[in-house]
Image (tube, rainbow, N blue to C red; front, side):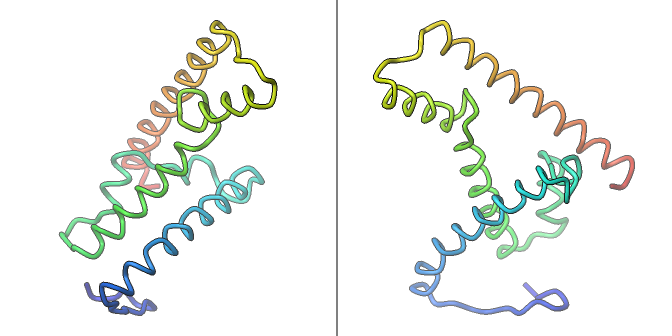
Length: 144
């Protein structure tokens, strides 16, 4: 891949790549945390910062490029791992939240509460998915 203007291309050996991979993965998580803080502070637009399948396909670009493919795949994997750990019922982070509650209180949440929390979490995820798809389609037509 030819570096874009202002970018530096560096070639790493296999050993260097293996050592650098986890560091880059953790950097992606910290960038996500900073982005969440900016979204909640209103510094960046929630709508403009979300992309779904259409936005992801556009990020991969129109021409095949191995380096870009693997960079984007790694980035998306880390973003999805981060999102999965958010304390939203129906995601792994939600289950961790329930386990922590059980550890602290010494008792399980009621079956009814657990079930209702999962329904609310799933509803939130479905609403988010509809919003993201709508957002992607709207960006296609508005050029945003």
